[in-house]
Image (cartoon, rainbow, N blue to C red; front, side, top):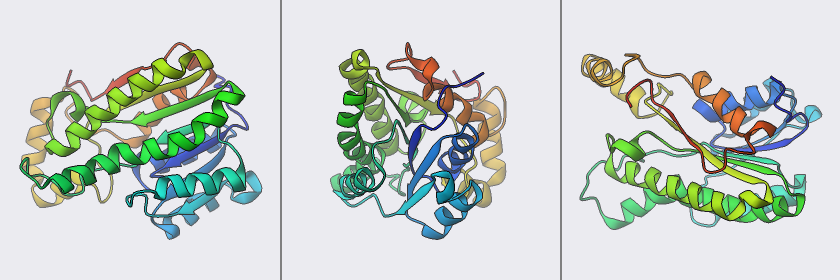
Length: 252
């Protein structure tokens, strides 16, 4: 299938690991010009080099997006240096170790910031130019935890908020051909993330949990999630405004 996104500019937050990293390769394969944002400059540099570097129109920006205002700052910098981006994918996120449901309010807000606030800051910069261009695709990587709450509660609640934000923005901008959508993956084995750490500390317990709750009875992989994101980012998603695709390995 021709996705119709050749030469489109793509911005990916959280582009150094997991889904974001895999997306860099898949979008580059489609002929897109990829811009990555993440903390690790060394990881970003390697990825951009592998997909063709600046000569192919690929760039990276190393920054910690967690501090308030950094999403706005780096987005304005990218807009000034590279121009507008046609496709925005938000794959940055996580629980930040906040597992106690009675955690301090500021810990809850830190998790919200990581999973929602960063996306809002970036979108607030890039949506206006997309409206002028009358074409844009914004995809949020949410989580099945937004539905079932089977995770650290602050994380699950923030992803539920992200889903509502996606729905609300889709209603505001779909008539301008700016399509907001999202995917809700189940558990993935991403290096350094929650499930990878759990597998190291208590593999038998984790395997039993996965086999009991997911009909496929295994973890998902980033390359099984990314094709759906590419479809939502393509010319074929014009009727997918507000779509939230469940990719949970058969839990629901």
